[in-house]
Amino acid sequence: MKILFLVSSLGGGGAERVATTLSNAWADRGADVTLVTTFAGQGKPFCALHPAIRVSSLGSPLKRDAKIGERRVVRLLRLRAIATEVRPDVVISFLTNVNLANLVATTGMGVPRIVFERSDPAAQALPLGTRTACRLLYRHAECVAAQTDRAADSIRRLYRVRARVAVIPNPIPPGIEAWTATPGAAVDRKSLLYLGRLDHVKQVERAIEAFGDISIRHTDWDLQIHGDGPERQRLTSLVARLRLGARVFIHGATTDPWRVMAGAHAFVSTSRREGFPNAMLEAMAVGLPCVVSDCPSGPRELSRDGKDAVLVPGDDRAGLRDALSDLMGDGARRAQLGASARESVLSRFGLDAILRCWDDAFASLGVCA
Image (cartoon, rainbow, N blue to C red; front, side, top):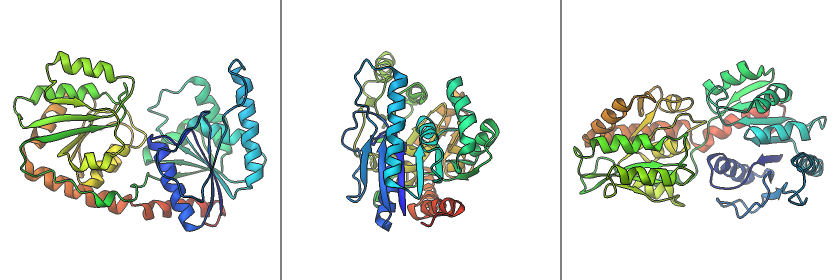
């Protein structure tokens, strides 16, 4: 089976890591996988790649002063040339702009295309031109994939897709099962963990403010923030303004997230929206109890409507504060919730289970896995 997989980059983002996990798994099965990155200046992959996977880039050789339209045409032509050379059985793409490039570049080639929308379009503020392009082009895909039922419903409604819409969640990365948190452990200092990008969508300031509200009640807890992004300096200033510098620590991005998770005692996420919350999934897989904003889309489906994590309305500061305080003050509940979360997601989102979802999508297109 020949798979042509289009991704924006091979960096450390959630979509890129999932693309790497799937590509490695398919290569292990014996598939012929070609990964094409659509951004110029592609560096070393964040995650290790199977040695049989071929990697190519659409980085434009044009001069910096070339017009944007000219660059796009060159990249589309290069993508079509790669597809012609590879002669894949299926072309898969991740992320909206890459999906659109896939559908334009491979028009008329007779190869099935699976475009994977990584966000819920009803909750994402896309430019009008991009949303219009999705409405015009997605209907020509042989399959459109989404990570959640809610996102799939939004795709059908907003983009008027006539093609098959498949729901395929993210897999748990291989190897994470070896890491286990002990959230109920009686230790001198306990850690409430945030791990993810520091931008306005993640609303990390809400976690900092809620922790500040209850820190005097839970003097043996610290808030550990691992991540980077445009909001880092503002969040650092907020910590200083609230005089929490001895209790709240912003470490920057980590290359060892599972070790960090396994050493924590609870996990918090305060996002305004999610495509599919990978950090929450991995925290649950490690066995951390989670307090998360009930945002679109992902946390409710991931937690089975709140059975495996504490869901809090996104604009409820008091609710977030109280949920964190209750969990931080109850070691037995942390242990129970962490154990049930781990068991639930390992069974539902293990790599084998997700690969079966992909096999079903391939079979619906007449492609043999």
